[in-house]
Length: 181
Image (cartoon, rainbow, N blue to C red; front, side):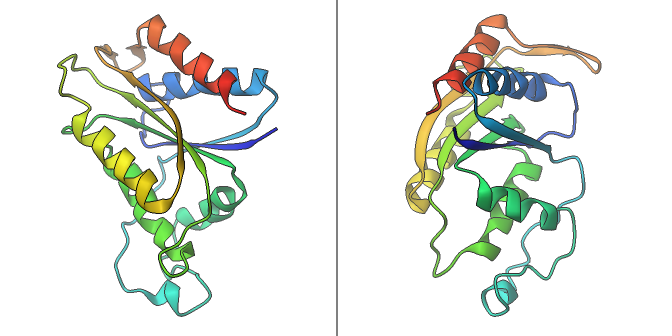
């Protein structure tokens, strides 16, 4: 059994990204994994680059919602990064979460993690996810993390309160969740 942390970088609860994450979680729970989901709808300030964390026991001086997430990240075996596509990249919320992980690094080294990328987009253009996938691949390689897969759900639609993700992507996320070992 793995401990899985699903970080949803959208403040739109029950939106497309949240639905895709829930499908992954359903599969992971059926495979008897312990899953925690956080939705980044609380304020997380971006890293200030002050490096105080590197001199005071890896404690970030910014006191916001991120303080609640450090221990969840450290305890997790698998980190799932879930984001809507905003201007051909991951959301600013998710990027701030990733940047703030610097506080727990030691000599730019991070705890070993298996990772998953889940993304949604209204666009169905072939190039829509290029920047996000490139960033994710670079991030996992640079931090020594192990990519366990991606679900890139394009062509998502709907209005607030009535979001629509194609069932093929929901099934793909579910199966990916079940496949985590």
